Image (cartoon, rainbow, N blue to C red; front, side, top):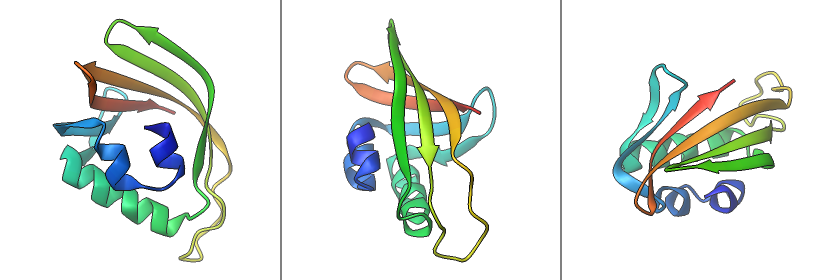
Length: 107
């Protein structure tokens, strides 16, 4: 999934997800819902930040969960908005079988 993300291939990224998967803030609002919503949302983000990239700093598997500590860089935005400083995030990937059903971000 991270290779697809870093290649900015939203369709390849969501191919690893269940049909009704989502991305959300940790214990909070869903920011992208379903494969289609996630693909559309990521495509928009990739268009805005064509240099966007996530580097895995550490990884841990616990049951049906994979936890990544990620270092994210965005680079300049195509819309001229202010530069987003690089940031750290913990991403919690929840799996149902071999597909990701939910990603939650702790930032």
